[in-house]
Image 1: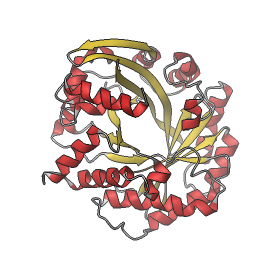
Image 2: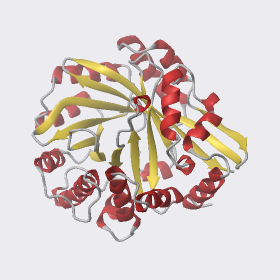
Image 3: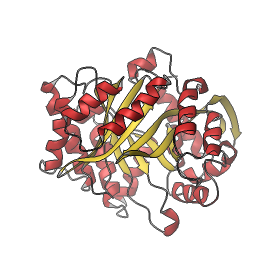
Image 4: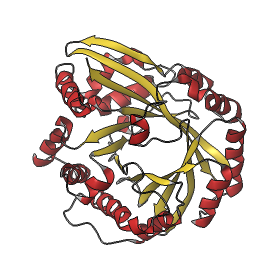
Length: 379
């Protein structure tokens, strides 16, 4: 069965399994270690997910786990694919007149990416990611989700100034979505130019991994550049874009990881504002050379293997102010696929770890995070 047919079948089966994503989470509660999410954190997740369609679980969904925070809480990230039943649900909500500006922006992106001949579809394919901030849900607030687009394979690799126009296509689409999804993209802003300067500084062995916006926050864009294999390569790039943070903190952090042989590739997450590049820096550590579609098709995918993450887990536990119970729980998160039996039929559930991140602020790594995921499909 082709992957799109599998997604459609899973969406249909999930409609018979639960009335919302939150209800589904409650049904599989035992799959969530209490050290990672529990109590108010669990209640907040379920409350937010009850407003989302259960069909979203037909696509990869994941959790941002703050390992430096003793509270067992998560943020939620979900894939959304144009042409899916889930995308149609978002469109129906928007047409009902009860939608928000953020919903209009999401639907605008889905419609754009749903037409095969559009430039945005050619650069970023049919998929996007929604990132939900769960922390404030119990206070009665639902912040607009972050919106992320992922360029296909190496289409936005560095060293190709002739592709700057394609890079601008993604920036314009996200700026438009952040403003509510109007048909006409807003004019170029200073944030556009600062982001373009980052792309122009990229070397041929790097590529744009993702570009995102947070409609509820002040930054213009968050740009993730991947392909760095050493502290020297990353430092050289950061210097070339005029990153205003503490370079010694970055090199010190990278050097410890290199000594442990804890990663094969690093991505730099850069905040872009109207006035320039922000000093906060995210460093995501991956244990497989590339995550392009070609790499996945060629096999050797690392997501559900616990062995790839031993060195990083040890580094986080020994060198950073992380919660030991969370580290221990994460070591058992990647697992072999298991079968779930329910009213919607038989589902296959896979759990894995996508990557780890350190957030550099000032002269220290202030946050340590893990990005764990689940995948479900009907049998």
